[in-house]
Image (cartoon, rainbow, N blue to C red; front, side, top):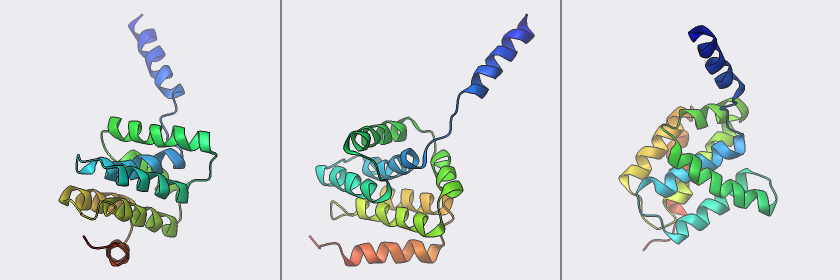
Length: 149
């Protein structure tokens, strides 16, 4: 009896597809930066949407749902590995660098960079196998285009 119960439990977990879509994984990673410093501003939320639009091609209804699910998924996540694995599997090196650049843009949207934001971006870049030189290049290109306070 116990064996049949355990088999049923294992089978139910196999049927569930825990994988994220590229779109949801991207939304969750971008959302991580919005929430990284625990000070979510309207300008960061707006930039989150703007940057997500650069990476996904969906209609308005799907975008609204994706923005919401991206935030929820990010908040529920224990780590970033599940999201970065999806991007590593389905995205080119250039696409992953583009995601890192979007992370920097969101982080600097409020004209300041919290240490936790930078640390999170570094962690994501490492998990995406983005070379350190690209990590720095994307940061510098965003800093150069960010208006000073």
